[in-house]
Length: 344
Image (tube, rainbow, N blue to C red; front, top):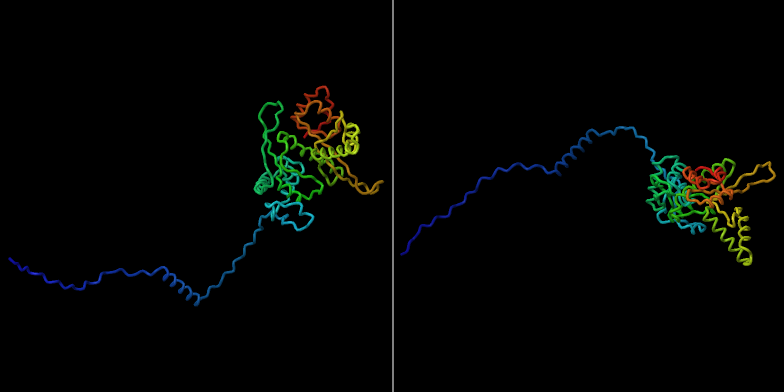
């Protein structure tokens, strides 16, 4: 059976009414264009007159590193003195140059002594310079234990400065010291750091007296340099005449170096200070005369026999107050030896 279902006619679509859309906002670019156009129109109508503002005075720049600028050497005479890579183009202040020179001459110096002699007790400035030089790998700052030598109480910590190889080369070029002044780098005997650091103190006291009496152009020879020269002279004498008695050779060498010969040995000081002194124009001699002073630093570690040899040598002997007390107890029978020991 067939059924005919009525079909629904397709509906005709009528256009819908347009939706209500919000007005479009101008873009930031259009707003910027309008603002620039308005500003240009205003300037055209009434140009802006710049106001005369008083110029601020220029502040002087704090640049204390205005002394020396190092470049690569072109002079044939100084090419042998290699400038370290970290020092090329480096500027140093006067205190920094003096610090490198003082440490190089004495190998090791206490920071407290440099603060007094180089920086006039301006510790903050010294700390900044030390940080700068350490960053450039020109110096080393170490803290070591002071020798107790049987004494009780708290262990004293000593802060000292030494030069690196680069600092040694730089000090040679910037220190202004005589060319024959030997400079040192690094620690040799860490156990003797406290004793070696006191040599600088003794030198300052002795140099003050030399300069007051008219001495100039001071040069320092440490025992390292003196011993090397003495051994070289002894070797030359033995090579020239192998049959000569060693005692005679030592006596002759000691006299040549103006050093005492005590108990069969040449007594070598911790340091020798060489200087020049201008002679009076109305005197018999003219020009300048050279001289030297020998200094020795005693510590509580010295044995009684060693103390007696140093006392007989005629050196200018120094010791700290704490070491003097221990030394006095060691040589109770020879109190007159302690009368000539100067205090650091």
